[in-house]
Image (cartoon, rainbow, N blue to C red; front, side):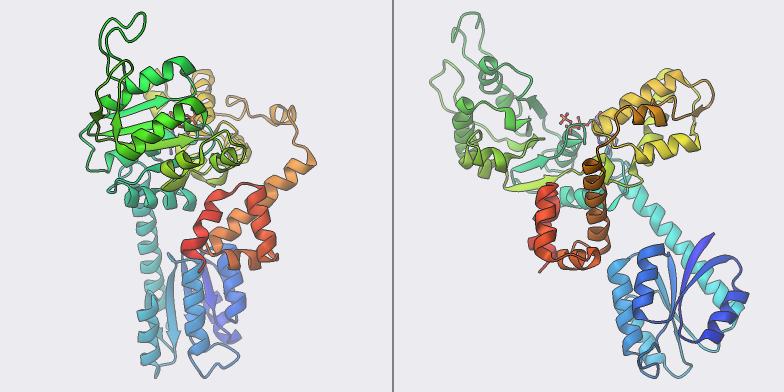
Length: 455
Ligand SMILES: Nc1ncnc2c1ncn2[C@@H]1O[C@H](COP(=O)(O)OP(=O)(O)OP(=O)(O)O)[C@@H](O)[C@H]1O
């Protein structure tokens, strides 16, 4: 049943609405603060708001303030203003502030029902539109609908047309390469090459020649002049994956390339100009590596002109289900199987697992589940996520506490629209305490957002 929040201080009208709107789950609030609590708790798609709220019901100012607060917490919400029949001016002001519609008392349940049905319908359409825009059709491979992923996608859209050197920071398997490709695809270089090199998987002595190429005779076995990855990416985009694993000895040479956009092949004397957009990715904390002197500070500032944090799968709410469904579809096609749904215990298991290997782990689990499933439905057992398998590696109490704390911080942060002062208020801690928790849990994206959204 759809949830409808009614903000109304008149108990008589509350009662009337309770009887006349049986198609909705009604929740009530009688003033601004209880309205905001209900919005946080239920995230209703539609709210009716009486403009005359206590402490001064004869004045619309509290109602208008309530409207602004509701939309700040839940911008997609459709708020229908209910006003006295002489108060058109304030109703129009409310619509200007972002209310969806207004309705003048006395309440006629049949008319109100029509307005409500339209509001719910529009809300559902908008939600579907948001989903489609961000679930793979628009940003091709980045599937997901959570606030953290949508925020990252919005940043990609802004970064893509520029030449800025971007650092993608996130745990292993979160999709850093997918994001790098997305930046490339949305950039003016889209029809030029996208070249990726993993600095961690190539032995130190070979990495230099892989990157910069070599001239014939440069070393034993160099039978012909060979272009490096940087030259291969000319005109396009180069992804330096796992840049944190680049040996210090090579970092100086990389810095020169980034500063001057020129290279010299190994054994060569010629300086070659290259036009390459660079994206770097790492699961390491480069700032910490700089402090530990295992990563050059000057190179760090070069590669992180802009940093984009890719959130771990466990912080993406229901995205795990959306991605799981998309992958299920893909694997059914690949293996010619007909496994189309998840059992309730599988859904619960997908939502509660911590996903240390992120989307790559989800892919692996689903692939074997599709192959193993005995019916058309995947169970928690097929996924290897039964209670006993989780119990085999119980979390320590400290870990449980830490997981709960970081999750609560993320939730409060989302509710506060990225405002750290409000986040601290919602969590009941001071700002300095919130900062130290953010540092403790390395929620670097929250720290980074401060300058833009918390002023
Ligand atoms: N949002 C997403 N929706 C669906 N699949 C995704 C998504 N993000 C990543 N993937 C898939 O998950 C796998 C891991 O992604 P990717 O290699 O980009 O991660 P990564 O962060 O670069 O990992 P690593 O740090 O280990 O190199 C890939 O197969 C990718 O296609």
